[in-house]
Length: 510
Image 1 (cartoon, rainbow, N blue to C red):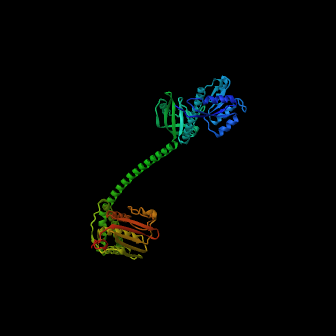
Image 2: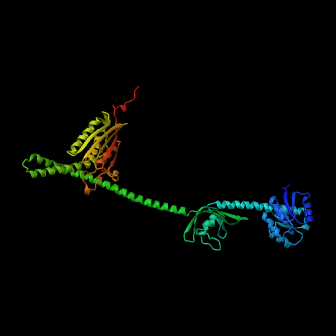
Image 3: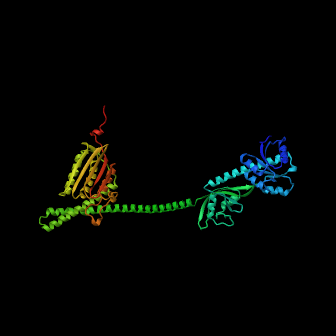
């Protein structure tokens, strides 16, 4: 089998020796050699700068160099150098090899076979060395590009960093004699020394400042000639991840604590609501019984006793008025409790929506008496007849009007109405005191009052708006509010309704 020809540079000052070597390499054989000659070291270096060679044959006894200086200068070109000497001296050969030569041959013992074999072996060894160096450089580049630490663990359990990430990771760890000890959790390393593989093990490496760095380790054992020599570990610093996990765990614990507290609070609120409902039931029932005769007998006295003097009559009138006021409060509570405890029965039927609203406005005019408040009805679009539960809708609008006139000492209250797309919208607008934004989300709650009880200037239980929203939602509608303090409020209810004679709802015909 033929081999690739070799290009050899012969550095020889003696013409006779050069001719002998040329003749020897030019003879027949299985290796073809192309020989180039240089008579001095300077000439050889000049040729190496412009030509490519596989190896150099060197007689170090040149006129422009002394000793093995030529060997040292030639090997810098990363070519194998075979030294040819005229002295059969073993020390010369070892000195040449120590200086970097690939081999050393004695001229008077040369044969073609020995010379070509030596050159071939030197070239092959150089090629293998270059390949190994390339692979080593590639491996180093790969290792240095990794963000994770790569560490070799020897049989003694010591850690040897293989890339910068590993050096940085171990730089804060205690060290002795340049070797880093194992982490306290040595179980993963013990498993590797036993020939096992490790994936995802978490361990800590003590730092010089007393803190631990937490690591995630993937480790593989390695052996030489079948005997375990240690392991190669890829370590990832997970200290920050564990810190985040600890924070998340702490937050979860705090969240669970808050949920438990809120759950207890909800249970407490539910119990309080039950007690409140029971209390209101008792109050509404127990107060109704004595109030009825009190109010009745007071009115009877006013009608039947003509002999009452002015002071007595005023006292009885006060008893009747206060009793009636208390009776109205009890009726409101009873009515609201009934609404909450029993399902709302919707009884739709045809009615005149304009007449309903005008009647509610007339009632409100009687409520305000001589107060300087203007009440008006503004109709945008409204059919002559609607089909809905007029009684329940009237109850909603009546409570909205009561609220509007209560908080509008002077100015105007407008009742706007519009029907479209199967929804009847009624909006009660007033120019009264308005409501601060902080109260808007609470005003539909039971017994909620915007003003503190100690400074309240308006009466009422705070049930009207709660009743109106509950009833609106029971009818499949909605009740909302917008308000500006000092400028007034607008409460808008929208409920489903049918308009049999309304053009927008009439069926299409050809």
